[in-house]
Image (cartoon, rainbow, N blue to C red; front, side, top):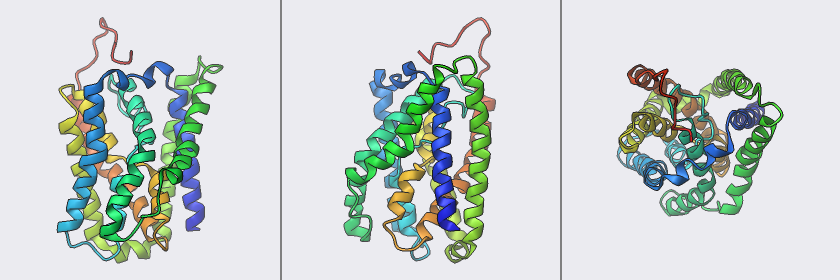
Length: 288
């Protein structure tokens, strides 16, 4: 049952990413590339500061045996493909989409690099190479994204609405599957205990704070980067988790999906309330 649920999660991720592509344009892709300072801050937060946060937590916190590697797997699995451009009603759709694409592509190099760096310390994930990660990114992210963007052409009139509908329904089903995976492996969660779940919450808070503080002067960029930092690449995390014998790490990765969602919701609501209402007389220019 566990393997079936993990496969279902992978399929749902692909469907959601296709929906993101359906609601995005080619112009959105290069938004971040034309803003090198924002690009540098974003990548620094996602690929360096969040992993360093996890390494520090593993070093100082008395985590249950076997859970340290799960935390590190999550930390190095940057990419955040589940952050759709319609996640937040803020005027930075293009930034979110461009960051999602760029970070997922760079994960092909950064994840093996972090895995190789951590392997001598923790004795795991040392075999991963860009050749292992690239097919995951291609099949779980690039292919469905391209399919969605191609389908946008004949469905232009209804693409936005259809994208939003799929994202809402798919997100709900993804959450249910994640909960089912946790329920089917409740023993592992009980074994890990509340301290580990609390650690996941602390890591999410820390990742949100890193993104918020490094996102620059624009409030919308801060919010977007915070959520991207707190969201990890499920496909890559499951691949890295597969290097660890047994289902423990994969189940704990699923636990992070649920915990991070619970922790991120209050932050998003607070940021939405703080966001200024767009002026009806001033059309948005942020999406290029």
